[in-house]
Image (cartoon, rainbow, N blue to C red; front, side, top):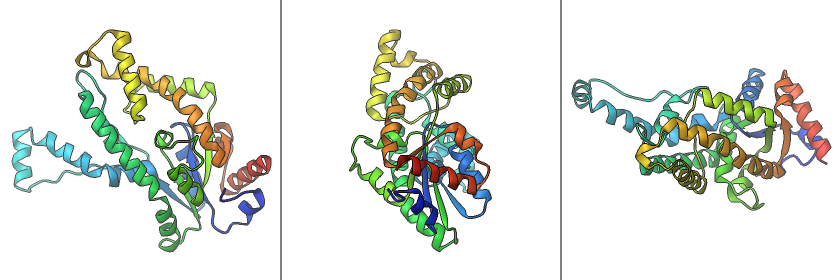
Length: 283
């Protein structure tokens, strides 16, 4: 590990961490809290995806929809208006809307798969860019410490059982991976929250093919008969169960903290003490 023990963590003049785990457990919360202290740079993978890797795809989709309306099409052809998606690190509506949902009134499954592939490539590229952003944060902006705030789907693109996985190995060489672990109660609350407001997700291709085929078979429906929200609600709980052991395997590259411990942190000093304690326990 980048910091093999508490002493090396405490002594490091430059600290770099990578938060991973289920969405909704506190990755962005703790990132923003650390940023408030003034010494931490927040690199949001989701924000990077929306403003770099997926930006062109999202923008082209906006233009394609606008071109269906004659007045807007005329304005666009005359270069009299400008369309551009707005992405915030706390609001990924533009990215989610583009990813879409498969089924009747949603996206055809082949188009859904194509957009999933685009997202996967964009997320891997954003993660791969982490080392250069560590350098930029320090050399350009003068931040001594760095946070890589990952999306919940990071575990889909890494083989956590392979200690030589190229992406995980690269990330762990530059950051201390920190798994924010949720309980079964957290998982049930996330499922209830998702059921109230289902949103698009990114899935490992093999997992998506399995759950899509299973859903069609169990409900005796064809592609055009699938209700998009019903499908992604049904899939979400399975996705959480699918991801949990992958997160646990990834945690071997770093340390584990609970969601409760994260939300109890009040400032950067408390955070640094928490990680030191975890490194001590692990050692």
